[in-house]
Image 1 (tube, rainbow, N blue to C red):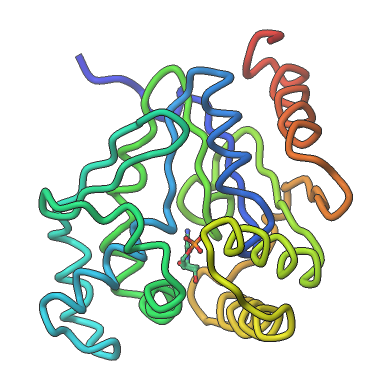
Image 2: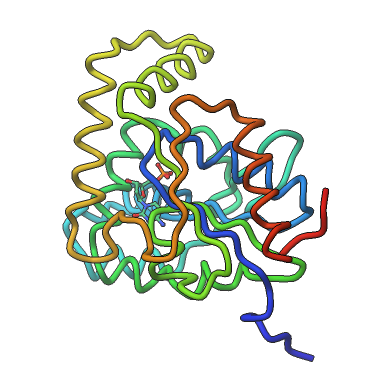
Length: 232
Ligand code: DC
């Protein structure tokens, strides 16, 4: 029996890189027992696979073919999700700055976005989905009953990124990270197709001065208030 996908609640979380979407989305999904879509990972995997097959980052038709035939598996594991590309470990490789930069270029191409659309919608399964990205509320799940636009100042996002890198043993200057963040923001917001912007009916949440548990609590409260999840 097929299910009516539109009856499955979606919490759409959009916003710029470094606002905490990944961590927050994972924690909310865990708390509710909902599925999780990390849509950015699909763009990153497309960029990675394109590199592997020698497809140039301006070959839109070739990149769309790569996106359509991506053989990817997400495996929930402990605190995170393991990502396999064609059966091979890609969890950490897709998180590098180089792949992130290529992903941002690939994501600006309409044919690539179209090729990944249904794959993203297929994540909408009972009892619910937390969808993390840039166009979750505006395009992919435009009918989502709760849309959040998660932001933080560029300075704060650079600071968080520096901490994250430091934990991984990598030293990076705050000013270079800030520049990268600003360049990525500009590209994501200025592209002609599905640019990063809040949906008209999204609630904007600035996390600059909020802790992760505060944001997770606020989102579960909003879901409960709207009758989308029982009080947790
Ligand atoms: O969230 P992230 O850093 O993993 O995303 C990688 C790139 O993909 C980023 O430049 C924005 C782009 N992206 C997008 O255009 N649409 C999405 N739904 C998710 C990510």
